[in-house]
Amino acid sequence: MKKKIALLPGDGIGKEVMEGAVDLLKSIAEHYHHEFDFEYGLIGGGAIDQTGDPLPDETLEICKASDAVLLGAVGGPKWDENPAELRPEKGLLKLRKELDLYANLRPVQAYESIADQSPLKAEILEGVDLLIVRELTGGLYFGKPSERSHHNGEESAVDTLFYNRNEIERIIETAFKLARERRKKVTSVDKANVLESSRMWREVAEEVASKYPDVELQHMLVDNAAMQLIRSPKQFDVIVTENMFGDILSDEASMLTGSLGMLPSASLSESSLHLYEPVHGSAPDIAGLNKANPVAMMLSVAMMLRHSFSLEEEANAIELAVKHVFESGKRTADLADKNHESLTTKAMVEEVKEAMADDHAIF
Ligand code: NAD
Ligand code: IPM
Ligand code: MN
Image (tube, rainbow, N blue to C red; front, side, top):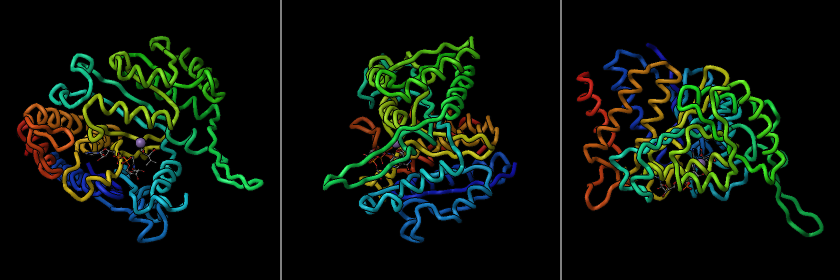
């Protein structure tokens, strides 16, 4: 199979985990006889420094001319005081909007072999396997107005949570379709006791649910959902929610695995062009130290191979290899403790490649 992949490493550890992803993809290409053509693009802080734009047109063109997009992370303290339009995050938000990547899938699976690093008890984590479906191109992140103003000497700021019915409908449909392939339960998370947009969300969820009688729909208020994720995460199969709620709940859910460095994601559009990125950010506190956990990125590669290229066997091979590496006690610093030495980012990637070789006798 021949595919073109746009690579947008971004900033901080985004660059380091992207190196690991490329390394992994090259091995897969070689051993499964595929041809992956890589084209690099600038995004985020690095793009601002080099071009004055967090998402240069050239990057967008590279993405549009590719079969899939792989992204590291953007942002860092260097650009934190920049005006809104010149922030690294703006580049990522614009890319999501331009490519209409409305459905962000964030799977959360607790591996028994690293459960000791979660602050939760092992019996609460056992068997946790949930999927957060985060609406990604609307809601509080994209509402207008979003601005500051001065009136009579008083400064104020406003952000707006806006959705039209169609935006809600398509994300809920996506959640139901995915739930059908899983344990057939959708928890729609909202704040319908306060927000009008949530009351419409709930209405639409009910309408969509009537087309999927085989799938159970549950509504849950977001504050309760945040608590239930910790109290009893096994109750969840598919969670579908507004952009910002999904952002917050997914970082929280990452601790069911033990580290934010574990969660991959796929951002899907209605077209065939999708983007894959870890849930974590550029981690300025550990950037440049070769200690970031590359697993979120490697699992994002697996999601890309499965969703964009239908390479199920290759995707499974990565996921199985990651599992085996953890079972052998190997971990990066975020998951290590006195009983486990910590591997560098590069060493962890090597371990996963070796585990694939052992599992499949192919490398
Ligand atoms: P962060 O996700 O970068 O880091 C939070 C904490 O988790 C840090 O202590 C970090 O060291 C740790 N961590 C994250 N990923 C890790 C990994 N793979 N391995 C080991 N440890 C890891 O969040 P933050 O510190 O709040 O944000 C830093 C910057 O990243 C900000 O500029 C923010 O806007 C940006 N950000 C970008 C993305 C993205 O590009 N998708 C996502 C989140 C945050
Ligand atoms: C994420 C990040 C982004 C978001 C930021 C960097 C804009 O936190 O992908 O989760 O909030 O969506
Ligand atoms: Mn986030």
